[in-house]
Each structure stands twice: as structure tokens, then as C-alpha cells.
Amino acid sequence: MPVSLSSAIDLAGPGESAARRMLRETFGFSEFRPGQEAVINALLAGRDVLAVMPTGSGKSLCFQIPALLLDGLTVVVSPLVALMQDQVAALRLAGVPVEGIHSGNSREQNVAAWKRAVADQTRLLYMAPERLMTERMLAALTRLPVKLFAIDEAHCISQWGPAFRPEYADLGRLRQLFPGAPIVALTATADEITRNDIAAQLFAGRVEQHVLGFDRPNIRLTVTMKRDWKRQLADFVAGRANESGIVYCLSRRKTEECAAMLAGKGLRALPYHAGMSPEQREVNQNVFMTESGVIIVATIAFGMGIDKADVRYVFHADLPSSVEAYYQEIGRAGRDGAHADACMLYGLEDIRMRRQFIENEEAGDERRRREHKRLDALLGYCEAPTCRRASLLEYFGESIEACGNCDACLHPVERADGSEEARQLLQAARQTGERFGAAHLIDVLRGADTDKTRRFGHDRLSCFGAGAERKANEWRSFVRQMVAAGFLSIDIAGYGGIRITPRGRALAKGEGEFFYRKDTMLPGGAKAVRKQREREGGQPLSDSENELLARLKELRLQLAREQEVPAYVIFADRTLIDMVRRQPRNKAEFAEINGVGAVKLERFAEDFLAEIKAGL
Image 1: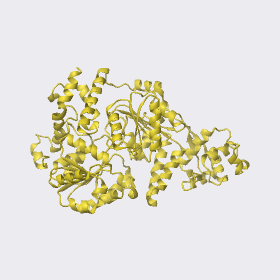
Image 2: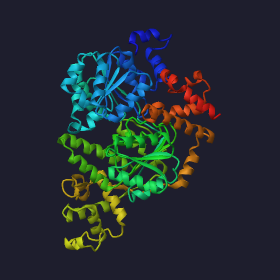
Image 3: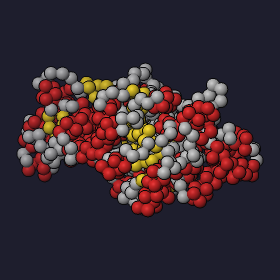
Image 4: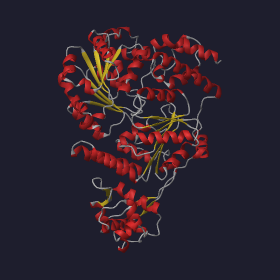
């Protein structure tokens, strides 16, 4: 059973806090990561906390350790059943009494879990907000010694909206119903507006905020115009055949199509989306977590809670929904601190589809306005003419010098005055009635003899053929950049027609200028990637060490199947890598491995020590 706070303090050695002892003995870590201890201490002192910490920084420990030190129950609110199941499984393997009540369990399992919570046999209880915020559950919890609420993925309060997950907005009632229990809200992605929104909805504006830096300098950032996404993706992965990666697609259909395309090129590519059975998703996830050189092609259904250290790249085949979503998704790369790549393709059709999604959402005008602004910010990042990382971090309120590790720094693109071309495009939109899409406007400007230009009489307009000297790709780039810059907009309510904004009308009158950046193709292919790796140096594992790591991963998978849990719940990749580098010979040395707590030491040391010894 967990110890109470007072007894934990009594057990702690000289100069060692109860929290540090718990960190070492239960979770197997010798030191806190930046920000963890401050959040833990605030919660133990009874203060509400909003913690914004980068992906991979160990947010879960910020509430798991207080839950074990406080003499009562901690309720954890989590948005996804799979995420709850994985965290519950991981805690149980560490010897922590934990339960989950969710739709992934049978009714009998949920009843048994609740009975154990009532009998004071658990310290953490995981639930989705929809289950927690029922009057029956809230009334039942008031009869239990609830000491802490943890709201995981708290950005959902602001970003998913009341129409999608209304119970997230309802979580603000917890402060009145449980005045003695502090609340911690945790997320990896929250700009100032989102933080203020969470603070207002959950804490009535009064909360202690802990915001760590957002920079992940080991991830190289690249954005390139979408031309032929299959070829562009194939070129990108060509030199990365032995590396693990994630490819994000907008739809389930495209996910399947993309995985099949990569598999056809001899790559190990597996799909992952909400339309698959839970069993097949788990199989694919386990393969990805256990084997090297596997590509997961996924919708946003994949990623929350995944702790795979050696993901070498994240490739967005489609535009993400916001800067926050983009940041969270690329954060799954390079968690071992070694070099990783984040590449995004985007084009005008991506912008149209994202605008359409926002307009179709069952939400109020204010929320739609904010989501359009969030998309505007992402488009601004995509079109950034200078350091891309500086643009990304500026969104989160940080300032840096040019990073030297993004496409804008490594392959600078000059900005050119495109005011004249912009005015030609504005004239074509105006003369055709602001109701046609980009393809037709480009045909008009280039003087194309098509059925459409003749049928509507657009071949007789003064703008017809005015831009014939430029290629269609160049004009597509102008349209996209003018939309991103706010000179043009896409008529979402209609059929995707290009409209002129007030800013565009001012430009048409000669007020202001439009500067554009020439599109460049992403440097890719095996040769480019190999040279890049050679420049970066580093100390990769030797061949023999990689062989041992592969055997340890296979052992981990075997044990995971026996325990019926995902592979990474047994040990994270970084723990296996630490085993390979240090090659412990006995239990005392095994106990020093990062991520090996007391319970896992007893459960797994013998098996892993035997495998390590066999390889010596």
C-alpha cells in the first residue's frame, strides 16, 4: 500500500525529500527533470497548478508522486481510453495501486475498480470527463477522501470546444464541489491565449502557472509546398529506411493509402487510425515500439502518451489543425535528444479543408473566430521568411536568435516584391466576380483557352493573359501566400471561390506592398540524409550494442504479451538503451539503470540480466 505523506517524510533519508525518495524507489529515477519538483511541491502544499511542459518532460510524475504521498484518492481526468489503459498498466507494473473506470472495461471490471477505490485500496483513479462529470459520480466521490484532481491534456478544455467535449468545460465545477482538493492541469501545448482560457474555465482565473521552455533544438524544422505528396514523401524516407518515423495524414483513407504506398517500396509501414479495431491498433503500436525502422502512418488518433525515444522523424503529409497540434505532433520525434526531422507539406487545398472543418464545427461564432486565428498563426509559420524555429517559439511567447537548424536558416530564401503580380491576381478575382477557385483564376491570368474561360466570357477580360509569363506553379504559390498573408480568402460557405479581403482591396488601390518567398523543394534522398548524418556526428550504438538492444526489445515484447500490456509499459526505450550502454551484471547494478524502480527490479531484473549476460 502507498505510504502517507507524514510516514514518507519519516522514511526519507537525511537531506532527501519524500518526493525524491518516491521518485527513486518507485519510479527508478535519481533526479527530477526540470520543473517537476516545483509542481509537486506546490500540489503537496495544497495549491492549484497549471503546468505547461514539453513533450517527454515527465508531466505524469507531477501528479503521480503527490498521489502516492497524499493519504487519499487522486482522480485523473484523461481524454482517451487507450491513454488511460496504458498509464494504468505502467503504474501497476511499478507497483502502484491504480484503477481505471472507462468504456474499455466491462461493467464488472468497472464495478470492481470502484469497490477498490471505496475500500481505500487505490491511490489513483483514471476517468474520462464524461464519466466523472455526471451527478451520480460526483455525489459518490464527495463521500471519498479525494485529495487531488489531475486534468491531463488540459489544452482540450480550450481547443476541443464545448460542442465536442462539453464535460471538459464543466470541469470548473470541481473547485466548488471539492474545495479541499487542489487541481493540477497539465499540457505540452498551450499558448498564452490557451493558458488564460484554461485558467479562466478551470480555476476562475486564479492558478499558479509553471511554464517551461518550448524549444526542442534537436528537431530540424522544414516546411515545403505540396506538389506531389507521394513522391515528396518517398524522397524523404529514401535515406531513412532503418529509422523509425511517424507520418501524419488528415483522413483514414489517406492513412491506408499512404501505408500501402510505402510498403510497396519495401518499407515497413503500418496504418493507425480510429477506424481500425483496438486489437489491430495495439498490434501495430507494439511493432512500432519494439522494432527498428518501422513507420507508423496515422491520423491524430496516434501519439498521446507514446514514449518511444528513437523516433527520427515526423512527416506531415497534410496541414495540422493549429500550431499547438503541430508542436505536440513533432514533439514525438527525437525524445532521446539526438537529431530528428520534422517535415510538413502544405498547399492551398489544405487551407481550404482546414477552414471548412472549422466552419462545419458545431460551435459558436467566437470559437470559430478563435480557431480561424489559430489556423492563421500556423499559416504564418508555414510562410515564415526567416528562422522557422524563432517563428514557432514566438507563438508560445519565447524569443531566440536564428537557430541554424531549420530550412529557412539552412537554405535561406530571398523575399521578393510581388506587389504587381498580387494586383494582377486581385484584378482577376474582382473581374470574375470573386466566385472562382485558384485554378480558374490562374487559367485566366495565363490566357488558357479552356471551355470554362470561353463559357463565362473570361477570355474577353482585360486581365486575360496578363500573367502569361509566369508558370502555373508560380501563380499557385502567389495565391497560397496571399491567402496566408490575409490579402485573399477562401469562400468556405460557397464552393472554394477566392475572395478579396479588405487588406487585399487596399493593396489593389496601391496601398501597401506584398512580398513573397520563392518555393523551394525539400532536399531529400538517401545521399542528402547520409551527408547530414555525417555532419552531425554523435555517438550511435555500435553494431554489437544494436544487436543487444534488438534482443532486449524482443524480450520486452515477450514480457509485454504475457502481461497483456503495450511493450513500452515494461520499460521505455531510453531504459533499454541505458541497459545496453551500462550492461549491468547483477541486481545492484541493474537497480542503477534509469527507469528501474523497486517493483520492476524484482519483476524483471533476472530476465534482462540473463539476456545481457548471454550477449557478452
